[in-house]
Image 1 (cartoon, rainbow, N blue to C red):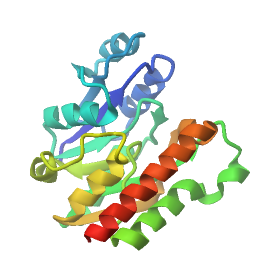
Image 2 (cartoon, rainbow, N blue to C red):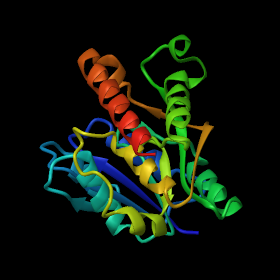
Image 3 (tube, rainbow, N blue to C red):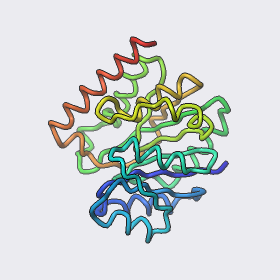
Amino acid sequence: MKISVVIPAYNEESLIENCLKSIKDQEEKPYEIIVVDNNSTDKTAELAKNSGAILLKETKQGITHARNTGFNAATGDVIARTDADTRVPKDWTKRIRKAFEDDPKLLGFSGSAHFYEIPDLLQFNNWPITGSSKFVHTLLKHEGMFGFNMALKRSVWDLIKDEVCLDDKMVHEDTDLAYHISKHGKVRFDKTLIVNTAPRQIKNVAKSAEYIHRGIKMIFHNHEKN
């Protein structure tokens, strides 16, 4: 099973090298690593290219547009995705592969996260992400997915790529993705698959409030449709 890794990136020169190193250090090397530069004005694209990643350019601003460009270009059987400010564990691709091989019905797979720079006591058992997953599951009757730590079969992407919302201001693109995948099959969240990621949304109060409000609005909208 070939695994493509896609990383949308915008002005991530201080973090992307650590992200790419964690992917290149995998126990099971990915089939390809694709970085989608979303109009960066720093050295993000240069660093990605120098690392040996496949570098793509997406001029439409927004993480959904960058993600879609990477997903459309991926040629593996499974598309794994993380963020440029994230570091994945050494067995990340191996566990993703095993999850899909062990369950032929699985179409979407996601895991949790530990926020670096935030005291462990404040995120015991990674509750911000595991709690969010439980909330989504309770309302929508399927698991959520998180952009910094997720994967999907390329075959299901081909089915839903023209259905997903393209407006980042309207949805959480990863939860929207999980919603569309769930209409075709199984989505699973594994709280033991943990990446280390930046606490940007948590540390910025205004962004956190907007992020939470947008997520709740989107979830209840999809709940009504269900």
